[in-house]
Length: 374
Image (cartoon, rainbow, N blue to C red):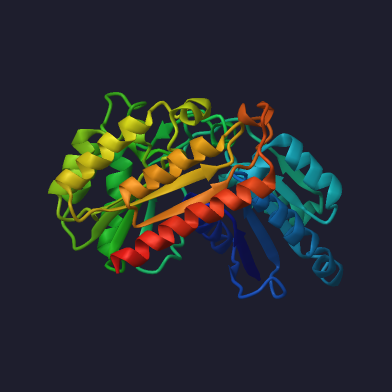
């Protein structure tokens, strides 16, 4: 029996798919090379942008022919997109050949749902509204010499454009002891040169623990472990990137001199509408500290263009911030309305033609800067 996993979205989803692989391998499945040879196909979905959801719908629809050829084929969907009950219901109504549809919180029960479908041939859909971090399932690591380590799940920030708090829940940190034990095991395997910590906002790590464990302490404690490895992390929120974390990156030899610091906009009015809780000036101060304390640090960022009511002048402030920072790279996205978020209900939605023009200008600026650095 073979499995095939299709993963959409961020590195956290890639890491979650490693957990899915372990569940399936524990059931006797082995990794297949294509959908055509698979006995079970799992889509691990993303809800951040509309385009990701459209690709899921298109690719799931294309499986109808495979299901006709192999009636025993099991098709399962899970993740952020299916955590939205309305979307999960749409999938089960529109694609009657889909067998399983679950969300983000009951992923560890995937094996149970598969068994129920195999032996009962009944479709299963179940969306939990909350859940704890499951420490019981290891990972079939698939990212070469890099080992992903999830340190927390969820987000408390409620940026007005973002669906994450609604599909991943509030912030929950793993116990430091569990994280350190996982990393010790990774080091003992001797296969991984790099360890990457993951979280929607790693800078918030430990605030919900009792006693609290600052993110800087976690970084230092990991670096104190014996072993030849490089440590990195993503993603950071500017409002929570403390001087102590910057100092720790500067002083610890094992930590990669790299920070991904999403700005999203260079205009204060837009930042306030986004509920980002910092200003352009705050962001620049952080960048200046990083440059002063870690001169060799690579900095990347995320930007959203065409947020509701964004004017040409406000977009130009984003351009000027990008020009000021001189990023090593940025990821630029056109604003995509996500149902259920505050921004989706805002007046002043921007025309797609304007979004395309702005995102192209922003990417052209970064490309020009990169050529100038060569």
